[in-house]
Image (cartoon, rainbow, N blue to C red; front, side):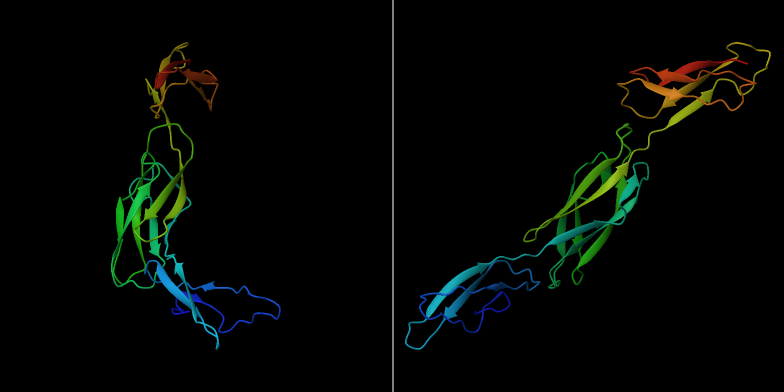
Length: 232
């Protein structure tokens, strides 16, 4: 081999008696350099025979990796909800490297469109923001990819958990136990904006000797809230 940093071969091989050829292994060497495809010439020499050369191309295999600091975040975690670290595998880090970041779901995460691994460094870390989409869509897995010319791309996943809420507002903060039926009202509101389906909400009364409320109420499809009566 004329380049043992890319491919190595045995120093000698033996063609068995009665055979016209023999197979041998060629080992690829990862030099951890971003040096592109390299043409390696293999030579065979034996006294009394014409020298023989054969060429093989060794493809570069430098890669980017991307890793989240957390396996899951809540969609309401806001700015700097977590971090990602982008790393390059090559050991020749004299030049800075700009890496494109591809966000698989902008409705769940906000990531920079690119990051720079500084010269002399093999990795960089940046913060990631959570995005509250105000949809009742459960946990969403988001894939983020790191891409740069000459490198195999890297991907990582994170779960973004849902955070929709209910709020309860009383029309009156005080009533008399003599007020009887419909002594006051309360309004229950859902935070999500996807209101295509009705939502049944269970109500819990911690003192049924003072007030009476329905066991449940339904926020109709198309509405974000509903009002119900409270009896004294």
